Image 1 (cartoon, rainbow, N blue to C red):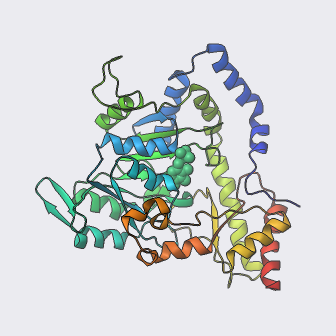
Image 2 (cartoon, helix red, strand yellow; image 1 turned 180 degrees about the vertical axis):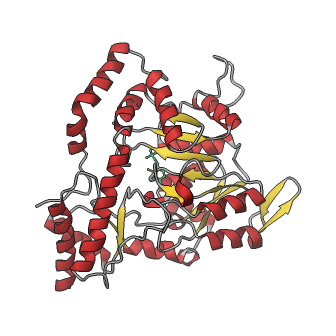
Image 3 (cartoon, rainbow, N blue to C red; image 1 turned 180 degrees about the horizontal axis):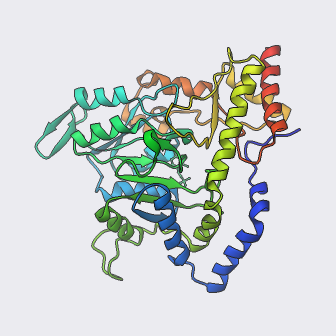
Length: 389
Ligand SMILES: *Cc1c(COP(=O)(O)O)cnc(C)c1O
């Protein structure tokens, strides 16, 4: 048996007629840029996330970048985020000319630790004329960027409260978490000031290439994001701002509109697969070795990734590969230890839980179309590794 980490073909096979038709319709119209499918997708995704506006964009990375640009964040500024996330979270902050501030994660969820955020803002920063500054660096703290890693919401209420007290916007990196819910059924992306979604093919809602979106309840911010997406242009050939080409392709929007109708079913299938793993790891008796992911009470985890913690992770991963089981390490190097951020001067021990997660985490196959035998085979293979170890 083989169990790939992700196989997108069965999803395409199931929807082939609808998807092909949607793409051919765009081809027939020859309307490729900001057409009716983009508009409809923006409305539907915004509603889905509990937000008023959706701005279709070229990728999740560009969604983060343009959100930072819309707040005028740049040189001399700092943005606070977590050190254990995909590179784009920190990379986009740096690309604006601002400095990322990396705080450690809660080991249970791999999301930003709120107590560390509270301490940083209370002890390391001070209010001065015109802003809120990091005492050590002199940088002006301009925004908080929590990440909803693996498909589970960060602890948003205290994050939003801390931000409001200091007049800082909250930019949610919801790239892995469309449809995930925080307490009281609030969907990620619509909780902070702006939510950044990715439709990269491996995300729960994946395009046929790169695509993303910003969602927001803020009318003025939405208008600015729409302008920045087309080189800051409004009206045509008049540029009040320097933006870029951050547009979502019509053909991607057409694909995503078909797929959006199935998203709830796919979330449910991922949750069932996760529940199967949770049970099966107990049954085979490896829970002393394998720590299964925690879904916080009252949250809806949409399992973009099912990430376990294990000792001897790299040897297990090699063994699984021999068994025909795909797996991945998200992520082997925390952002505070990336070479390109050496200039920030972090030491590994500054974010010890991120450093530990980088050694222990392993993502297992979780995509919706997996069969029970495949899930059991993954569990049995892991049990066999620890029985022999
Ligand atoms: C995927 C991802 C991004 C970037 O999205 P792209 O569409 O690949 O540019 C940003 N942040 C996180 C946490 C992601 O997982």
